[in-house]
Length: 146
Image (cartoon, rainbow, N blue to C red; front, side, top):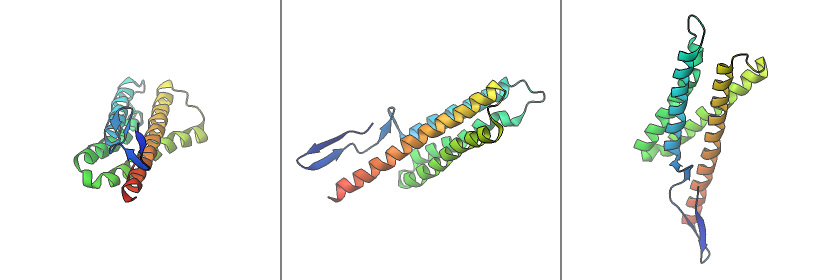
């Protein structure tokens, strides 16, 4: 949430953008961690014999998001670069399930469907938060210039 108030013609804004109470790097870590956990659970829950590594795809996509969030938390100087990279990962999270649904329709396996929906929803939510964060940063820069 961003807090913007106008005082005497000047725009006052909180320095740090938060979404659902988390900074964007922490939201990236939470999103990535959730996908890693889901990928591991999906791999262990599947009924295929031998187990298919594709069940862990959410973990493979969540791990870079988690890593980018950690790096952004530790290196504030390059925060912008890490968050732009995280947005690319989130875009891939959204595009993969859409491509799967487009080419193959709805999967028969409820585990596959849950994994695809998790990727789609978490990716779309991160893109939404990222765009709001980028707008917040731009408004903050513009308010400092005036």
